[in-house]
Length: 498
Image (cartoon, rainbow, N blue to C red; front, side, top):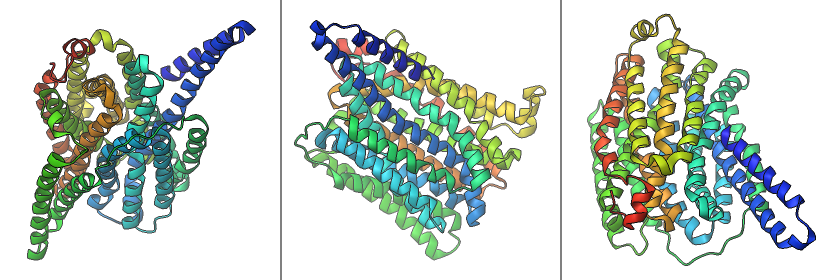
């Protein structure tokens, strides 16, 4: 855990420095104490990201258990993940703006409270419908963790914002390392609902720490574009609902309903764009998003969300059905990906000023795409490629390579967006997250539809993996338009630098 080691070492050095001060250096001691508080704040908001990392991978491992428990289809169980991504899409840009306007502390605590309540409701859900509804409530809270946390850290570390924000990319994977192991054990020992119960005490702990440590902040004047968020989320929900119903559209009535939903999605999207063009303070500032680097970055974010965030959550389901793995085994193969993401993102965050943005994103995206191609191989082909390695080892190795790729691409792409408009860090983070979660939500919906329509789940996954690999390779032109490095952005002084 390199980030934890870094923070502990830095914290101890500051404490030691404070102890060695004389009475004549009281002001210096107080300065050191403020420095210690900054790292405690960093640890608090990082714990929220760790919680979501654990929860995300645990729920991915639990999908097959949930499907079996409720006796539902792969499409409906896919909505357990897809509705969460949809909720994140709707809430991230709004909460980013709320964080800018109302203050970080109040926003962050409200989000943690919603996430904790949603977790308890999910654990108590008696049917798949209520579980999906609880997951949406979870998402409304979870969507605020990243934008509000990034805003908090950016304010606490103004002189080292790039490095501090980059370290966030190495914290989330820690949850992805321990989440599959904890999730597999919890499901085996206590059932699928336990992966939701574990969030409740963690959420309460984060609430207490946030109340004690986070500065109250000063509210600023501003308008929150709830109408824009509603139009966007409704458009995506209509699109996802229409795609999901295609599998069941065997009657004229259902076919008409599919057409209505898809048409409504287009109408709501156009209404959203028209509203954003005239809104006083839109959640998406269209005049900025029209600039080439922003367009390129958000095209990449959609594809990143589809190929790296969304469908990857279905890998444990793939392992159980294609390779006959247990829940614990399907979780264990995800651990190398999390380890690689953590280590690689930590190194890239440190070296970002030297490496720039483009090369880490380009190399990381290609590695992730090649990993998807490898996952698409049939079990017998994978066995031949592995030269005697069993399926657990081979899938773990493939996901390790993917973790290296994601760990390279994530910190650089995160900072590339922020540096285009550093004074609006929380808002930009929310918009970036919105595009990624939109890509993730739609990809999960399309993937589960493909699985449902395919002759076997294994065959469906092969098609999905190949399609996403092609999409990631196709994002290379967009990567080449994004800012080359922090120095390039600073020297040109505008968002149009390439």
